Image 1 (tube, one colour):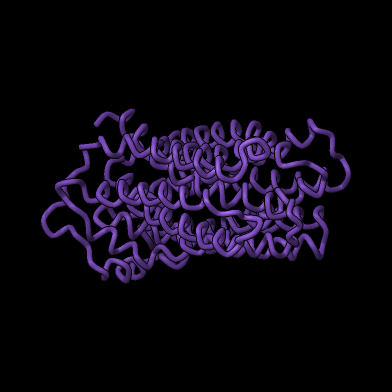
Image 2 (cartoon, rainbow, N blue to C red; image 1 turned 135 degrees about the horizontal axis):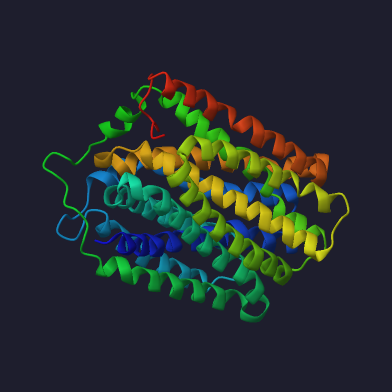
Length: 404
């Protein structure tokens, strides 16, 4: 399969993942806040992302089982996306203002299906991408994922007043159905070698690798500060007086373009200038971007200021995420790629989920300006474990994420 074909296939799969998560992480918080849910309640709603944090528990099963004739990863991805479409069509029949319990169950189911699809997709990506292709591949991954988030977060916020809940869910179902077509037609998945099917021992083997503790600490800390800060971004916009459509335009135009460009730029820089150098530089830019939200919180709230800051933050986040995900892919062994990558991704989700769930308490206690400044400090502190792990790599103490 050509490099362009690989990137197009992975783009469709990560786009499909990003849509349910964008609906959950962008659309839902703004809708809940508009309905009067407290900041603490909006922050705690982020715990519905629990399947993304716990997916490591069933990742070895996804790695081990599958139909070789159909494609080991493909035989998981296609049914999971079909089930996602069915779940969205079922949610279309729910009134979210009346039946909150059904909404919670539906969103939890969507996160479970998307997170399991992510295990198989990450395993497929590690298998078909060469090390030289991973920088650009992860740029495409992050860009496509963020595009899905924006489509079902920002764009749906714009359309929600006209479409209503039922049409929103139906549009999401139709979009995910379309993204299923490329993987359904894909026939290039390599067959596993004899004895290459990992068992549950793959999970424990990963944690026996030298340097695993310092590496997991590095990836957990790297994105925690950002998640802590931007977890209150959409409630902040609501409290500034912006409507759902205004937030949709803000994140769905400036945020959409900036995150796509940032991911692609970050992926290209990683391939050209090295993993660790880019990771450290992007961390500094990310901290500055989070701190910049204190400017409108302090009273400078012109429209162009909000667009400029939102563009800056999304761009920096795209770059930082592309660099981090490339290094996580480097740390995954090909024959247990789904398990290894998923363990790392689950650590990131646990850390970011913790940051987001606590963000409401920080904003309520400190106010938005101090909250964003505190988050920026956490971003700076969060890069220190990566510096420490890099030292271990240079001393030859670990092979984890040792690509320069």
